Figure 1: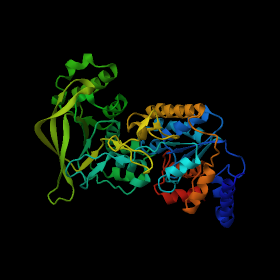
Figure 2: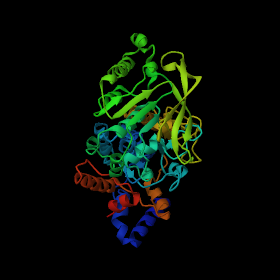
Figure 3: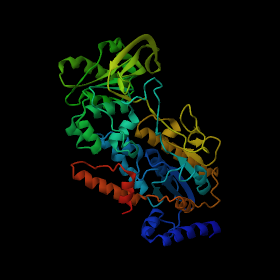
Length: 488
């Protein structure tokens, strides 16, 4: 055993001995360090969401000599599957079963409650692992870039979704829903999800894992009309037919569309690709049938409109309306561009939600980052101008696509990494400490990782609390509470 390994193991054993109450937790969190040796090749993944777990899955299946450690900032895994998928879409969350199988694999170790870039640097990880994969997603908000966007009453869809899905960072959001009209800027699936949650009958939401705080706020909500605004036309709308169909069939609501927004669409239908044609036909059907419906809650798309500014109320304390530029299209199909006509429109509204996209943020000054594209510059997942550093998921390609897109993208990164191991592009002749070297670094900073078994204790408690209320689970919103349950 070399002197560095001896020193690291001595530090761990000494720390455990001097803190008897933490002995089981520390040995459990770093399982494998004192008994069964890790495989010789060490790979770590930063980010415990879909991209991280799919990448880990592919690497583990690809080589029997690889130990994969997944680092996650929160004490809980699964990223946007837990915090981004709409609570009334439980079937989408079934992928958690696959991630759990990966996390429980003998050559995979989940290390939650570790903030890479703060608790440990990427350079430190690179020194202690043969390869490092950055899969930490996109936690930033894209700015509208218009006056008034920072007024109270304006929210990002990312934060709003995080609020009703129990993301600890958004637990204090407390959106003001005491207004009749909400405007959502953007027409992707996230925008439609938000609209549906705002207008869904409470009895539907009570059966989901939406947080109790969100349920209470929605029970008192005065929002009766939701407009989903996009800069282009019906034939460029970004949502999918599943989400649109859910809105059309949402009980106790009726569509609220403008006939003028669909000018010329009927004539263009025959030339559309089949998926786009079906989506457009469903919008036209909703437009035709809306007059025959009567409901006190309404939703509708507003096309060919771009935000100009958010208008304050009389005393300037909060948002009261939004001013939109009216556009025309130049070009055809998905390549059509929205061009302002010079006309404007104002919509009175007390709730404005910006759903124009997430963006990745730099994790560490040592990692290249393209601020314009908000991604890590890479070639097929290999971070440019580095060796042994990779990326997958949204930080690799941008915040687009669904979970299946992330799966394929992550498998591609895993495949490239395995190719580099096979070809010798990654030097595995030198022994690496992996988690054995990370343990003393975290110990010095007072950071205790959460193992997957620790997470399962959190999950069991959430399910127990949920069952008491007739829900699948009641998520914990406070990180310290999570840690208390995990280490009890």
